[in-house]
Amino acid sequence: MPRIGILCDRDEEREEIIHIIKMLAAREEFDCSICSVAREETAEWKDISCIILAWENRDRAFRYAEKIWSREHSMPVIYVAYRVEDIIAALEMPFFHTVRLFGLEQDMEAAFRKMGRVRLSAADKIRFTQNGQLMLIPTREILYLESEGHEIRLHLATDMVMVKENLSQCQERLKGRGFVRIYTSFLVNMYHIRCLEKENVLLDNGECLYVSRRKYPEVKLMFENYIRHLDFI
Image 1 (cartoon, rainbow, N blue to C red):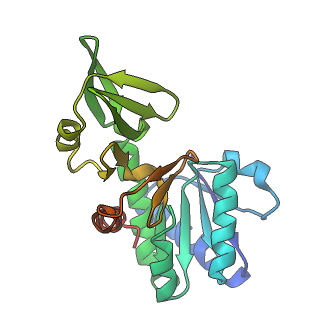
Image 2 (image 1 turned 135 degrees about the horizontal axis):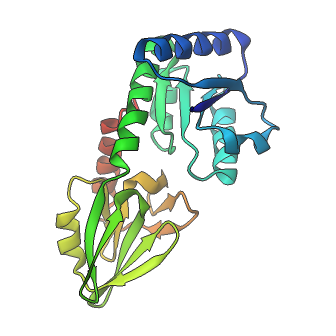
């Protein structure tokens, strides 16, 4: 049963979020438990499936999100935006989903449906060949591909694998699967991008990769389209 944590600075919004979650759970026929999370209770985050972060002060909300990710890199955080400008600012943050306070029920429903799609798509696998042996690697395990001569380093969540592949051919094969070419040598899985800046991308494992100036506009557009496609806004 999913355990949903709520980090909120106002009792009124907290009660509204809890009410909507219970209503959606009954309507969509799924079970979940709900708990309030204090900022200091970081030890409890490991037992939580996702955190809903509702904090009117955007800067403080973002700092709390960074604190969560520093402890739990893959923790899905649903951010409640109070204003339109908060939605725009959230595009540069790796939130699992952004919902509007003024459209909470509709957006929260989309967030929970997205959670179902992500669980299904996590089983998607990509074919690679290593020393004549076929490997099937789950898409979500791939952080990025790095070309080195006539080989490619597959940087995975827990490992690194060398395969004899061409990066351009891999890019074509991975087209439509959420990968973006940020530099001549790097093809990055946008699922793992925590933050996009003009000269680099920060991944959710803490690595920082260079983005070429020539490619930055295309990378920015693709990343924004990617998160919109996943119903971030």
